[in-house]
Image (tube, rainbow, N blue to C red; front, top):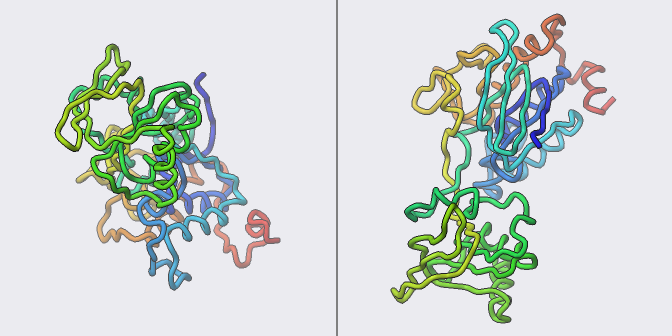
Length: 345
């Protein structure tokens, strides 16, 4: 069943900039839904460098990527944002006029949003899975080859081949093992980039013959109509053999791609979205771009720059969401009404 959702603003990207946009919008009584392809909030900060120290966030001599995300999560709690994670925006349709814009946004999670404003805060684009170099793999995608696990029940009773040596591969070996008929983990070498406790737990299952571990690389897939029944593998010793499986989960990491945003008519320049510096609006009225995804003279790709852009975009978004209301600028330090919204008064 397609889920239909009406909201003031849809934010594409739940990284630090998209999250702070929730705060700036919330101060203006604007509700937001955020969509992100990743399974958690925080964008690059959480996915690529959660433990990496950041030294140029105002007020924090040092904060880790994950620490920043956790603080932003607390900061926006009063505004009750709704997150739609593990989903990718697939389409955008302009419904309104330049003076009174509205949009219909669809995702691969079978959701349809109607909003007056869209804010693109997608960093360098969406994280897309790196695909293994196997001829014909496209024919199996979405039916028996998956790059993410969205519903564990889908894999109950299946013969699952998981490929990779990082945390994602090992985590899903352990999570799916209790419900799958059989789990096989394949990696090109007997060394892993995953958490040691996960690797040890996997080795214990292999030693107890409760799952299989294979050294090698998949070279081709066998099946009909998108339904897999075996993967052909070249082993570490050069021998070629088949592994019976009806599901393949390759975890080869992520790469950044602009994705469907490239089809939105946003006058792209070198895979970036040009905006003005008054309100960070694109050439399409009602669509804003903030953070690393945008381009303008003097642009600095800094988190603090994205925070500034979010504040100004929210001011213009107010005029679209509440065209008949007067925008009153207030400071959180002195406004009792803003403090009430934040739950501190």
